Amino acid sequence: MMNIAVFPGSFDPITNGHLDLIRRAIPLFDKIIVAIGVNDQKKSLYSLEQRLSWLEEIFSEDDSISVGNYHGLTVHYCQEVGAKYLLRGLRNTTDYNYEQSISQANSIVGGVETVFLISNPQYSHISSSIVRAIVKGNADASTFVPAVVASTLQSS
Ligand code: ADP
Image (tube, rainbow, N blue to C red):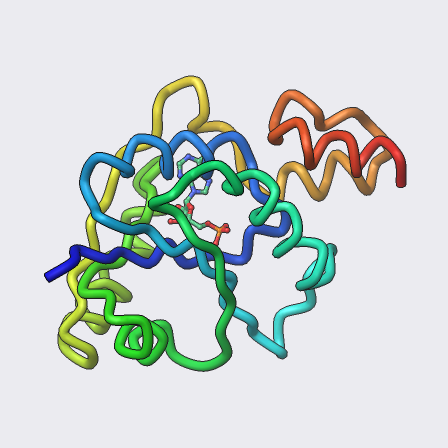
């Protein structure tokens, strides 16, 4: 049986922190699905199409990584795609406190285990929300994001 993990997130936009985490998780799973959870109550800065297109371009050469999106519960999406694992990153205790109860609920409700990787120190200051704040303030966020994202940010 394939060991499939879903890495769920908003990826608004994907950052170098996300990318590092995904690359470090490749040896752990047969397949990783990087999936954008669409929450209609939460307004994103970048459209779903834009975020998916960044993910597709970034992982186009990686056979074990695919890209998707879903509405509703993450555990239902895991069941749909046959994933027994969720992948999440921990930058600090704020992340830990937030993730703990979600992970426990996902295990109880959907039988899905969450695998956590601690962020690399050089990426632990990076978040999508900081990137969005830099972009909104008309400053350069290119060191925080993959090249394909940086080039779109610069041209918009
Ligand atoms: P969400 O909207 O679910 O918080 P994000 O796209 O912000 O989604 O993050 C998805 C996952 O990536 C989360 O587990 C988050 O902790 C992790 N993550 C975000 N930034 C980093 C980083 N710089 N280093 C490691 N993990 C990160």
